[in-house]
Length: 379
Image 1 (cartoon, rainbow, N blue to C red):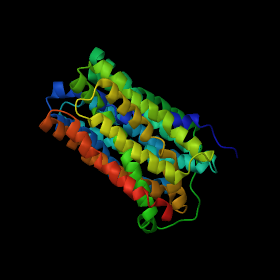
Image 2 (cartoon, rainbow, N blue to C red):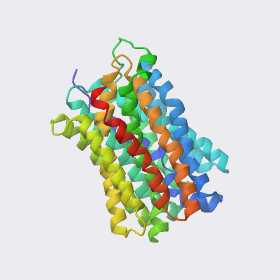
Image 3 (cartoon, rainbow, N blue to C red):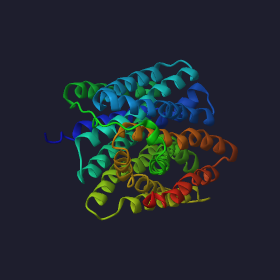
Image 4 (spheres, one colour):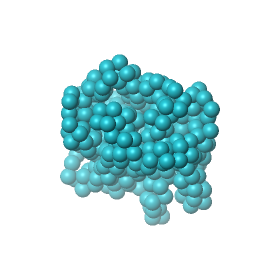
């Protein structure tokens, strides 16, 4: 049987990305209405990623057992409920609960969505298919950063959040009717063997730095641009979305580079991690002009995206008997930098009054991942 169209899994990834991070672009409006501090606002993102970490491994096992179609359908319906709940939540604690529900979708889009691609595409095409699917996640997040601040200022942030649930609901219905069923190979490997693999752990830490940087920057870029350069929230959303939209192109581009033999997977992963460190340095540079900051945004978009396809593809190949568990482990590892990073950036910003120290501290993670990635080829 021929491979199905990539349009539907990419749509599913995009609408989930749009919905599970829908709070971040309207954080300044939420802070103003609810009266929470920047650090508390950062914990909204933390709640999403804590839940992602908690559910990544179980979702990996469930996807190995029931197949990615069913798990993805359930995750899309869950993110719809989370968006509606966030829009209607009367208090900060209830907002945290809805962000935890959104974390189920975040875990699923990587684990079940990535496995759906691995099941239905193989060979060199797999790198491109994974890159396109991963790029669609960032496209959805970037669309949220682009659209939701303006909608929030015009209609109110609660209405903007409600509107963000509509695409996920529509695609969920189509997914349940059209997506192909598929399960991984029958041969099974123990989850313990996956967790003992140093190669999978190195890939997971690399993915942590790439995806984690894009998410933390996405969570704080509107605040960064409004406070550092005095931009309006609407303009900050437009400029802030650039890095994520570049990433939406960069992930499939990385897949093309590897599938066509232009770059080896290991070298591409190392190069992108080095690029993240440079990008954060530009953003953290004291007194940097807006042009330099935007160069950092562009560099971050490129550097956090090109290595995605080789990481996801190599992880699945490293554990052919338990690919869902392998992706679940990588998803678990990817939550670390966001769980710690989002509130730390907010707390350091509150303490120092600028983003130089927060972003310089944050750069330690990709620098560490870069050192570990140098040993990938020898594993």
